[in-house]
Length: 156
Image (cartoon, rainbow, N blue to C red; front, side, top):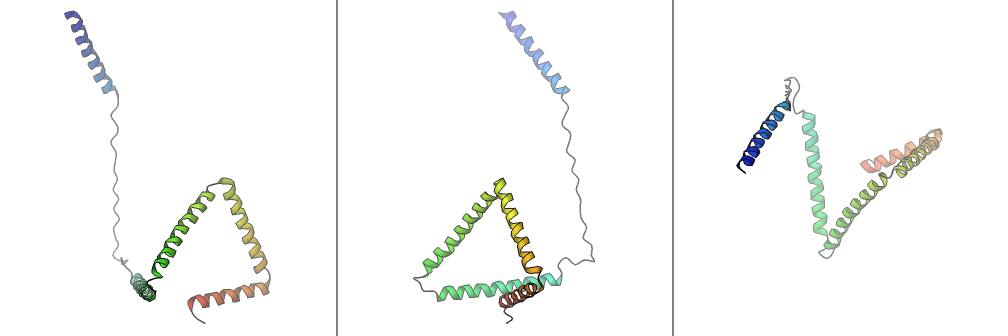
């Protein structure tokens, strides 16, 4: 029995030596090389141009004006109508999410996706052929687009 345990002890030491030699045979993983690139700012180009500041100021002024308009509309709304207004807004948001999910699901169907694209190209081609090949039609389209732009921008 003592000899058996000696064999098992020597067997374990042989196994340990075999494992250590096997570990040495496995190559060590290569070290990752990190390359850091730094961009230097040139002093000739300003970091914030004046036109960006003007655009941001205009945008902020428009946002404040919109906020004042919304606040005045909300204050002029009767208290009995406010829950209905909130329900309508929430309903519109939920409907937009549902419509987006439906369109996304239909877009992932391979045959339907390509078919709808083909229909879109055909309708667009028909529109261009119908309205832009005849000079009289071209002029009427130009007038209607100009009228729409003026009504949107308020330049009547």
